[in-house]
Length: 256
Image 1 (cartoon, rainbow, N blue to C red):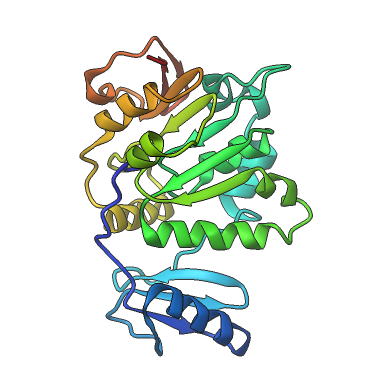
Image 2 (tube, rainbow, N blue to C red):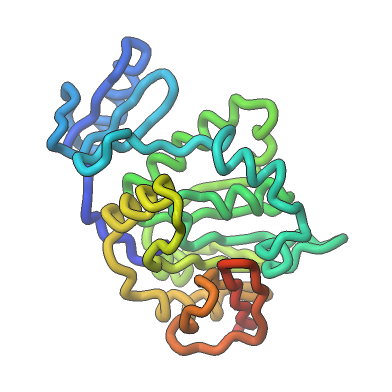
């Protein structure tokens, strides 16, 4: 997903959908400097219920949330192919080697969750406020799920600009993983809606080349960049190697 997340679509208010959510919703409103409101179809809002946090935008019929215990997250955890799948091979997962990862473009946190499920300690960086709040909520709920609690324990989230955090913080990892924004090519209506939402939230990717350079100077062993199969290299920087899957390519860059 995109590096410098532009807050192109920010929430205007918080909605408590049930009585158990009133207290947490008020706390979230205070934290963000927003107000509690009734559902307003023409506004971007964060909806909170006893089942978790969701983002509701006027252009989409259903609110969007992240749930590590179901859907694609659960499917990939159970049937994704383990350490033999392309993303695992790209980051260097093999017998006796479980690298630490910084996912500097967390997005919906799907790849981060997969890597954590394979045993990696994963640091997620997400600049977009809405996405970071949804990931934070998903991690809190996952901590109460016995089947995925240990996975969630291996994930820690930072909200902020990835280039700045890599340059100025003490964050370290063997591998830095990047998934720059690109137009969705998937065929399913669900994925198209998700990509539309992502574009609405984060805007246009304008700085992936700068992030790649920053990551290559910070990673302990390598940088991995996820790209559509056939797409150009980020910033015209040719990788040392690539791992291919049906629709995706993982470009591998040495540290500099």
